[in-house]
Amino acid sequence: MVVGDISTGTEVLVIGGGPGGYVAAIRGGQLGLDVTLVEADAYGGTCLNDGCIPSKALIHVSGLAHEVEHAESMGLHARADVDMQGLVGWKDGVVDQLTGGVEKLCKANGVNLLSGRAEFVDEHTARVVHGGDGQGSESIEFEHAIVATGSRPIELPGLAFDGERILSSADVLSLESLPESLLVVGGGYIGMELSTMLAKLGTEVTVVEMLDDILPGYDEDVTRLVRKRAEGLGIEFHFGEAAQGWEEVAAAARVRTETEDGETSEYTAERVLVAVGRQPASDTCNVEAAGVESTDRGVIETDDAARTTVEHIYAVGDVAGEPMLAHTAYREGHVAAEVIAGEPSRLDYQAIPAAVFTDPEIGTVGLSAAEAEAEGFEPVVGEMPFRASGRALTLGIEEGFVRIVADAETEFVLGGQIVGPEASELIAEVGLAIEMGARLEDIAATIHTHPTLSEAVGEAAANARGAATHTLNR
Ligand code: FAD
Ligand code: NAD
Image 1 (cartoon, protein in one colour):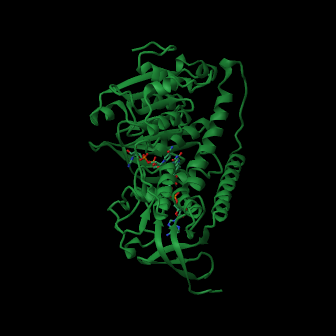
Image 2: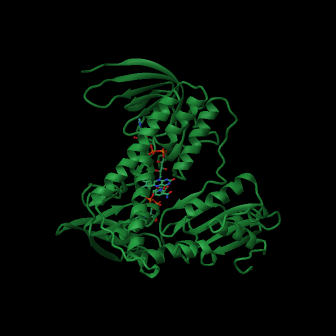
Image 3: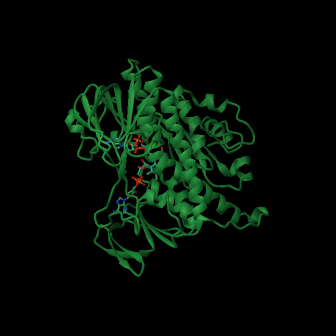
């Protein structure tokens, strides 16, 4: 039945129910705004349905399986039989619990939820086309809008996703059987996290990366440990080669690559994951009709209040560009809602952490020593290796380190890089230090529980002051 056009009004229209959009909607509801959130697909967006959560669930289980199978030196002899359907079913349950939670939280905060695709008609009107069989559309007048339409994987010419041979990260996260072999195009966040996960489950993995190292943007002594461990898991790397295209050969894909000098190579695998970055999805809601501009790459540029070039229209999350991380989207969503509600909230990217859930994990925040120097600081660096941490050794881990960067003169903490166990959790302490304007002494004098990995953060800060006790001072 066609319901036809109805017309409604809202104070704040949020387009997209991922981490940027649902957080903006909930915060707006908390602040007493009349908010309507429109989602075309599934609440929770990429993060909950096809990104952070499903990948971390599978990474956790692959780590467990691998760990129990490789603990002979600790006196543990065990075998892990992986039932891929059971594993993916469990992961889907985690996703359902969280996406259901988002819907409940939105409703509990008074957010009106609408299913459908929203498109701007002009700068104060949008049309929402409902899914399903001819369920019609509705027109919504709004005072403010927040665009939170996210991003999608970049598709390489010659390697279009088909869900069979050429897979996106979303396809890999829902595999019902383990491929015997996988070629991964791109050694960035997704390529490295998912390669590690599948190699631990028993897939033969080859990574082709266009640059000369994995994880662009991270320090070499950090990536080296991840690469070395990945090689130890049997992952084969080919650097300086860009994937160009593929052909089907005997129930497998043969992928062609080319170096800058025009040298070509071919790799054959049962399946191929293409993870060469994501592009903002600014083309899903006709932003031009509202007068909102986007760059050639599709980024909707914003100011420190998350405002676009149109005063009453905001953009948050991946659609507003790098860094494309869920916690950045959360923060931007918060700020947009608070600014609309009249609060003096502003974005500050100084202490945005990043974590890579590889083995070992990486956690970074703030400035590296080189970045600090480039910004005119005279940095002092303190380090604590995990081989000197009692807790790390009890976990069977001897590699990695915590590094803290501070300004030599004032001792203000400027940044941290951690590679090792639970780096994604440990980095939070350094982020808090930067956010609070803490000095090295504040971290060093904080009593950390023994025996924990967090002691290494305290020791790294002490090391920068020449006062570490469990490692030699520099
Ligand atoms: P999205 O989550 O993409 O949500 C956008 C939503 O908008 C979607 O639900 C979409 O259906 C909806 N939408 C689009 N157009 C319309 C329209 N016209 N009308 C209505 N609805 C619309 N980040 C981390 O911080 N940590 C991680 O560990 C991490 N792991 C990741 C792993 C993978 C495999 C991937 C792919 C990403 C990962 N990310 C991670 C990145 C993270 O998922 C994104 O940064 C985050 O989801 C961005 O949130 P968002 O709200 O901007 O967009
Ligand atoms: P990425 O930008 O991290 O890495 C892409 C890699 O592909 C780069 O190293 C690039 O040099 C390489 N590349 C590009 N074209 C190529 C080609 N033709 N052949 C071979 N290599 C090629 O992108 P991603 O891994 O797709 O991840 C996308 C985004 O998702 C990330 O930037 C991040 O914002 C987000 N993400 C975050 C996390 C996390 O926070 N832990 C995890 C996964 C994804």
